[in-house]
Length: 496
Ligand code: NAD
Image (cartoon, rainbow, N blue to C red; front, side, top):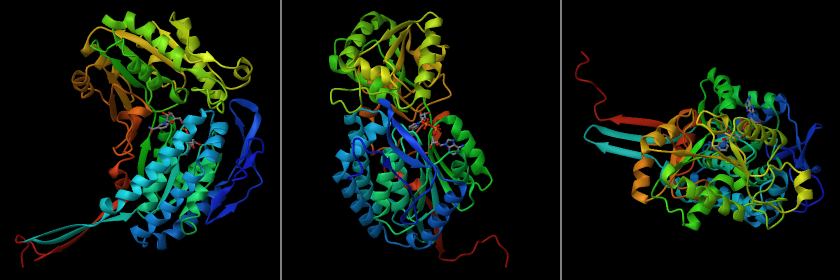
């Protein structure tokens, strides 16, 4: 992959109907570690380009939906092998365009191929016909693909959050148009091209762009399903756009995940404290499923806080995403830096204590890039924006609580309910976890380390609709079709 080079800008194109589709208008993508360096360019596609991609997917659906599952698996397996062979190069490109540290970028690509292989291994069983036969006759339930799927994805985990849609959608016989975020458009385009070239033309397409492209993908009558990951505010627009043609939706949205530290948590357990720090600051806190507010029982609060600061200062090493010593890179974009900084400023103004965490490895790099030093906020009230809002950055408040009832109420007092974590004696933590309103609650771990691709992932309340990952992910891309063959086919109460 000669184009994945440290200095030469990488130019990616839309990929429509099996070929690169070039446009004159291109958007630069800078390196968040050093914004004066352009990592590459992605196209600014138009509504017409998007219609072309949807039409290609719609035409391809006629044949692809009839292809055997075995053949679909073979295409996906070839694609997975290609990606595995390119992880080192793709990881560098992802770290450079995104800002996440190199180990983190390669980790995302690795999880993506694990997901591809896992899905290939179980799809046959999951979508095979279910046949029911008894004295009343025979019923066959088939799992039919929906049609053209629009996949719209965010910047924070651009590869896995696209592939969690692409893999089950294609394996179940759908065709697709993917639209990634302009804040991390390069690596995913290469990955989609690698996958698409193992499938018949038109089965998998990718376009780039803003609201014109987005609104076409969410309203075009030929699109049967929208799989979206991103902000709750954007999802409201998408639901409205999808309403006219009643599209099938899967929505994976924002969160403000609570982490609850119980009174029986062992503050002397170094590994457990380190895991809490990682549950806050992996990928610079720019993960939907990261603990965004920590509640600590007042009886251990005074011991917990200094231990937390010590662990954070040890684990967090801030710098250029390609520096192998770095654990936390820059933030992805300037607007997000400003937003998180505004939450810190607001907390300070309200009288909270602001504690910078971690070590800046190179001040010169830090001053140039979209860096924000990871920050701990103490003394915030539960109503303060730093506690209530999804910060999506390297910032976390720690708030003391007095009783279990109180902390459960505070944890649940949110429009969101994505993930959460409970830390303490295992059975006690599980009892508390059962009362948290969330799609996932992790015990004595949090964020990515507590995530398991084999189980459903998603949120409750305004954190989303539907689930991704796990065997159930295929059901999000099929329609159950019931074929009934009753023995009599008649009803006794219908008169002759
Ligand atoms: P975003 O909502 O701003 O953008 C997501 C995608 O939607 C991008 O591709 C964007 O270009 C596109 N888009 C924007 N407006 C659109 C419109 N009107 N119609 C169609 N598409 C449109 O989100 P973001 O800033 O890229 O990502 C951060 C958000 O994503 C956070 O809220 C985070 O919690 C959430 N997220 C959720 C999960 C999850 O699994 N629940 C995972 C990762 C991120």
